[in-house]
Amino acid sequence: MALIASSMVFSFSHIFLFGVLILFILYTLRSSVSFQIAVPNYSTSRANHYPSEETLRSRSLTEEQCRTAFPGLLKEVDDAVARGKFVQDTYDPENSLGPVRGRIKDGKLYIIFAQRENDMSKDAVRYRFAVLSQLYRAILTSPTPLPPTTFSLTVSDTPRTGSWSFARPAITPSSPAQNHWPMPHFSHWTWPNPLVGPFDAVLDRIAGIEREARWREKIDKAVWRGTVWFSPIGNKDLRKNLVKVAKGKEWADIEAGRAEVKNATTGVVVEKGNEIRIEEFCRYKYIIYTDGVTYSGRLAFHQACASVLITPPPTYLQPTTHLLRPLYSPTLPSPPTSHPEWPSYPPSEANIIFVKPDWSDLEDTIIWLRANPEVAEGIARRGREEVLLGGMGGQAAEACYWRGLVRGWAGVAGGWEGEDEVEGVRWEEWSVRGVGNGGGRRGG
Image (cartoon, rainbow, N blue to C red; front, side, top):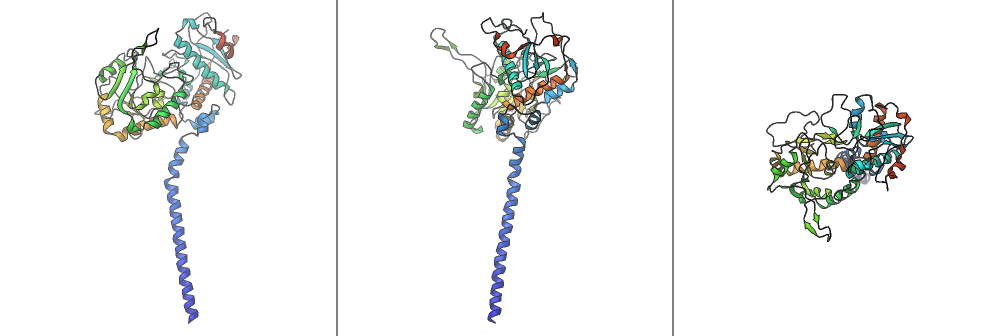
C-alpha cells in the first residue's frame, strides 16, 4: 500500500513538472514567434531599402553596387541611352563660344576647348570649374576604367541638346533632336555663396537643425526668399505672384530677398537684409520651391529638410527630380489633368505637394496642412528620408551618377569628324593655367 501511494505521488509530481515544462516551452515559442513577426519585418525592410553608412560614404562603388544601393538614380541616363545613338555637334576650333569640349581616356580627363574666362560671368567660371572638378574626382575614384569618350557640357541655365546640362524640360522629348543629358549640380563640389557652400557640409548643418527642431517645434509658416524677376520663361510672374499672394498673411514668411548693406569704409550695417542661410529654411514646417529661368539648384537642399515642400509642378528636371511623389493640392475640388511626368500619389505615399502655378490655392493648402498635422509630418519625413537614409543626395550617389553618365554617353554618342586629331590638355595642367594670366584657359 505504501508502495502504491509512493508511486502515485511520484506520478503526480512528474506530471505537474512536465506540464510546467510544456507551458514554458509554449510561452518561449510564442514570444519568439511574436518577436520574429513584429520586429524583424520592420528592420529588415528598412535595411533592404537603405544603403549602409559605409556605402553612403564610398566614392568607389562599382556600377552594379551603385544600381543596387540607389535604385532609380540613373533613370535620366537610362532614358537618354534608350533614345539611341547620335553624333555630337561638329567642333569648330575657330569658334570662341560654345560648350566645354573634353575627353576621357585611360582614366584621365582632358580639356579640348573651354570658353575664355574673360568672356564669361564670374559665376559661370566658378560653376564650370566645380563641375569639371566633380567629373575629375569621379574618374579618379572609379574602381574600374571608364570607357574612352569625348563629351560636351554647358553650365548655362538653359540646357543644350546633345550636351550635358544641369536640367532638362519636364516633358519627356519625343523628338530625337531634343537630346538632353542632365548632370549633377555644381553644388556637389561647392556653391560659392556664403549662404550655401558645399552640399555635404550643408547636409551636416541640416542634420544638426533637424536634431534640435522636431516637427511640432518648427515655425508654423511657409518660407521663401529669392529674386522675383528670376522666373521661368513660360511663367514670368511666378515669383512675383508668390510674394503678392503671401503679402500680409500670418502663415507666410515669404519675401523678395534683400542682401545686407554695409558701409564700405566702416563695415557698419546700414541696411538690414532678410536673407536666410540655406539650412535655416529647415526650421520652418513649409518650404516653398520655385523654378528659376529653367530649374533652381535649391531643390536638393530643400529636399534634405524634414519640412513639407510646396511648389507648382517643376518645368525642368534635374537628375533626381523624378523621385518626387506629389500630392496635388488637397484643396482642389477635383484631381488635376493627368501630367505625363507627375502622377498623383495618396497622402500616405507623397513626399511633396503641388499647387497651381498662380499660387491661388496656396493659402488653402497651408490651412489644410495645419488641420491635418499627421499627414503634413508624414510628407515632410518621407521627403527627408529619400535624401538622408536613401542617400540620393550624398557623395556616393554623386560619384555613381557621374560614372553612369559617362558610361551611358560613351555607348551612344558618336564623335565629331576629326576629334582624334586633337587630344586636349590634361585637367591637372588646364585647371591652373589661368592663374595669373587674366583667367584665360583653352584646351590645346
